[in-house]
Amino acid sequence: MNLGTQIKKYREKNNLSQEDLAEKMYISRQTVSNWENDRSYPDVHNLLLLSSIFDVSLDNLVKGDLEIMEKKLNQSHLKFWTYLMLITFLLGAVLLGPAIMSSGNLGMLFIVALFIVGMCASFKVEKIKKDHNIETYDKIVAYMNGENPNNVQSTERRNKLTFTLSFIGFVGTIIIIALISIYLSNI
Image 1 (spheres, rainbow, N blue to C red):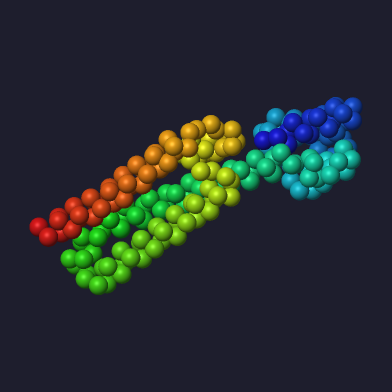
Image 2 (cartoon, helix red, strand yellow):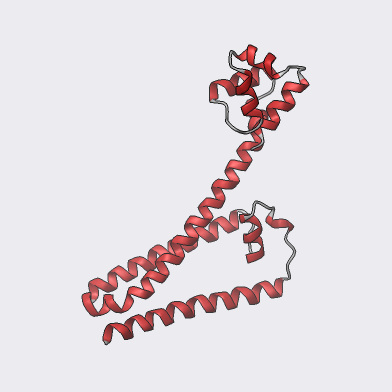
């Protein structure tokens, strides 16, 4: 994280040793060292005290860490909704045959529910991509690796072709799995 670097920067700017800062805060020098080396994180009380000692706003002290945490949170949301979308669509396709054969309309209701969850998840993925200006696979990979997706250079024509082929492949795979599932249920 960035907070350790910030603490060290402000400590040195105020001509304080780790020992001096520790005495002012009534903590051990080792605790200050752990903060600066990102082995531990100060609690809210200590963050407020650091902010006061360094005469900086709490926002300036932890700003980099908040941006990093927000980016990681957004990345985990993108992964979650993507996996939910894929799993529900594949599960729906695999269970389509058995649901039709064993439960009739009730089974189809379950399959429709799975596809609705998958569609909601796909809309959520698209919203996250739109919020972070992610249009292409290259930009998704860059975003998931913690890079700025806007720095990725790619040709628009190739991206449209890749998207179209990926979409056709995904839908085709779902249809094939569903047909196999129906066929095996009839045996």
